[in-house]
Structure formats: C-alpha cells, structure tokens
Image (cartoon, rainbow, N blue to C red):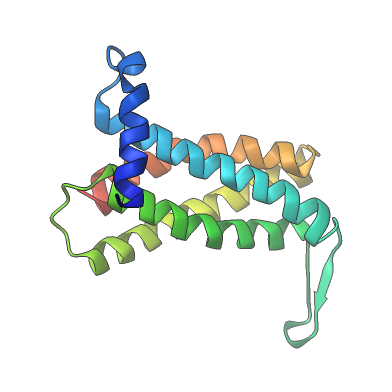
Length: 158
C-alpha cells in the first residue's frame, strides 16, 4: 500500500465524525494542511530555540544581519513546501488533470506568496506588537491558511 493510500485510509476512518459538517475534499485539505501547519509550528520552535538559538547572524557577502526568526521562517517554508505539495497532490487534489510540473510551479507561486505574507505578518507581530516569535508564527499562520486554501483550490490544483 502506498503512503498516500494509507493516509487516505486513516483519514477515511475518522471522516464519519466530520461528514455532516464538511465535504470529504475539504476534510482531506483541512487534515493534510493542518498536519503540515502543525509540522511548521513544531519546526519553527525547534529551529528558533535550538538551531539558531534566537541569535542574529551577519552575512558577510551581502553585508546584512538576518534574525533567527527570519532564518527559521525560511527553513520551515522550504521543508513544509515539499511536504505540503506532496500531500496536496497525492492525497487531497488527486482528480486534478493538470500536469505535475504545472501543479508544482503553481504551488511554488502560491507558496512563495503565502510565505512572504506570513513573514510580513511575523515581522509585524514581533517588531511592532512585540509578541514572542513562536506565538507570532502561529498567529501569522492562521491568517495565511485562509489565503493559501483559496489559492490552492482556485489556482494550483483547479
């Protein structure tokens, strides 16, 4: 059994609980997207706290200082980009007739826009409102989720 089929089997087991509230495709999207979002939150905490240790890093060749939360955001975006694409392509939007390369390109565009939006919101929450970075990441992610769903449904995997 393939991994996407196993994931769908597990999701189908729990679907009857949500069946009266949301359609199956939306349920799949919420479960896969929510899992990817949870992964990004855990990775953000680990990268920010332990990998980059809340420090700023000076990059000599561009003569710019990059914050730990910016580096963390970049790392998390790259990892969850691939995980998210695979989940959306092989678990959620399996009926899409678009070529895989086109889907990947469109997913990259929507992911890039979502990542920039999330980073701007992250920067706003941290630097303007002075929230803690991990909390700011969760808040920014919640705002971006709605935008991301609409982009993927109407553009990437239509």
